Length: 341
Image (cartoon, rainbow, N blue to C red):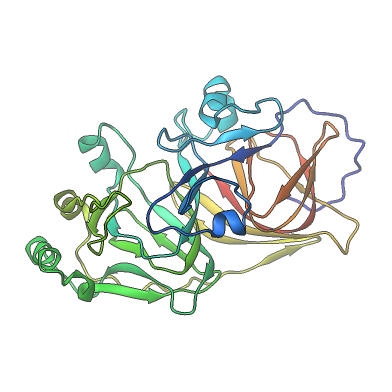
């Protein structure tokens, strides 16, 4: 990413162009309306709890919107063009991440995810799930569950679930807009009511529910719990309350960025673009090692492609950059989560 002014008479490189993605929606019972009302998802679900913005997972694929691959699933495009993933060994020929928006009008279930080793052995070779949450908005009393308040063992945790006292053992943390949380596989957790979150995670849909507040779904049935599997993978030690890491904005003309999270599964920066008061646009591309994804979390603008056309983006849009992509020029006032696999 640079902000050097590049005259827009550059010869077309012939490299692949970025493209917009269209998500799958999920109507889980705890969801609300904000993804339709504020992010213009136009998905006919009520409630709309999640949108899977960048996904090749069969439980919730995303589709290309516009351009040469219009209407194709991202999974199909990447099968036809594996070079779009890049040369980094972490991809292993498949998209290793999944990006979501989450609107929690009500509390999510208390849950835990397995790590890769457990998932490979007991879940037919699937990936485990480590994830990162970036809080886009939070009500005054919004919180999340992050681990346990004190050490427990399997028997004591199981009894607390059976007798309905689990909640008193959970560590609850107040959350605020722009907070970030890294949730390692094995951590007992839950997003609380009133949170609007962007989630970057491994490409997995493995969730083991420990507790769901005895709620019933639209068919009047309680949702399935997975207590024994959860106990197999959960870290039952006391967790220190998460502390927000120091974040340092690095400024360039027209933009600024800060590192949010770097782990073996993904790297995430927040990128702020504002070219309204300067003549320069912000140049951006993905290099040959990996694809990139820009998730627009605020604002709008346009990207000028080498081939001469413009790609307009708005709050809520997700743009996929194939590895070794064209260099685009970004103009507008917007914030992105800049994700690298």
